[in-house]
Length: 360
Image (cartoon, rainbow, N blue to C red):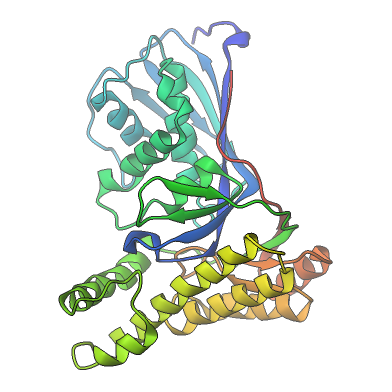
């Protein structure tokens, strides 16, 4: 395989993320609080003389070849690397030559920390930069194209939280009621402990389980002149004749999660209190566990172990049904790592990190 000189190497990376507040809120048009973490997907590419991207993915023991001048059917479920090429081709992106690429990462896979979104965001930026297309500078564009390639192309139910979070990085307040509204929140949070339950999750199934009932609930509240962005807990009582008990519980949980996100955001705009921040995280988990029912017994035990070991707060991370939890640990994070591992998880310390990075 002929390669051009090493100095033409292109390196693109994107981080994983934790969802501080707002699980299952982005697709409802409600705000979320996210933080990028210092676990990343990294793509190294060197130009070749073929009309193809030759991909080596040693972490998952896979190889692939994408011929970018051909329109191809998707060859497997969630064929994200192919779909990214298709999405960009449909928007007029062309490449002068192919690349030999290696894709590696340190983000837990299928664990709720956005490993797939980080890969797609990095791949979209890589493809744009490889085509000398200036859109790689536009983070909103990169996030939108990544969402198209990962979610829309496969008719999946997720929102854009992950794509914004891993593209922009750091701590973000994202208001999905106002598209393109992203605010970086500046404070030194200190370390978290990320704990992988080692139980894989089915994001699509969980999203469908939570999202579909909310779609009916939203129709009911809109029919009665309410809006999800400002309906109160007291208003739910007035709708109880039109909603089932389970739907009322789910609506109340989403309202409280919406309000918790706002309360947490306000902490970043005043004298930040880490103990209060941690308490809000734990309350958020309790609502996700009891209201949305997306936690698992193993994750609950890992969270309790973290709190017993001195974490300021802890919660499940991501869509739920398995995957990861995290604990906020400004002090003694290693003690929390040991506690989470004794509870059966695989744990490590993470810190807030920057977003998409392109080097060439």
